[in-house]
Image (cartoon, rainbow, N blue to C red; front, side, top):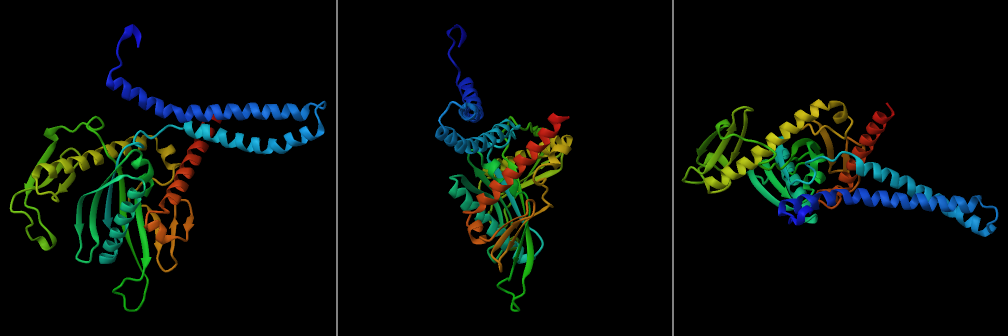
Length: 343
């Protein structure tokens, strides 16, 4: 640094982050440059009639693969240069709620909770149930989950929407297939610097926690309900015995919801590009169907069907869907960017 100044820890963290972001771009450009030189050398060998016929034939055999590699590298460089979602590296907060279908929908919500838990374990993400409203049959009316780890939001953001299940309930004597649904909302976890929440904008109510049937769980007023007055957003937490811990969890969810609300507002201002991406993240949008009798999962946004439902629900094959959605999103954004450049 100039004048012999020592680098502060904040500068070191900032520069390290910038280096980590730039390295994939630089590596892709260097690889593209190497392939360009390799292609030029092969073309020179082929065009030089003074070269041995076998050498020219060998170069012609190689040039096809080099051109294919160069095309892939050009696309890779373009993808690396696409604007990054500022939230991609953040932790994720999942809100899973039973939709239409009564007890069967709540059971399916439980299946989704376990799917994301196994997925988190496979990726070595931390999985924490922040609050849950369970049913007598072992399902969930609602569950709010924090999944922590670098890039957790980037991997899970395409999961927002309505997940539909088709299966024969255990209680169905006639063997008829029922359709029910659960909604998933994936929010990037927000830091204090991302969202400015004024204490004067909050109404905090405390009360006694209640379990199934409304019976009192705690004898103290440890449950917390926070209302953000300007937006009307209400968050409630009662899983912890400590009022302080419940408030901290409620604030974490509130920050995430306000941050996502601000992101959605900004996206509306860029609506044309938003609509070109895979799905809108709208919680009312049906995104996927899990068909138990046929053992298949279909993602309706990209028309992809996998006949490996059990592996998806075990979290093992979920990446196949996520990778395909990511690739489709990148392709659509590349196309939009190229159209803009041509204009």
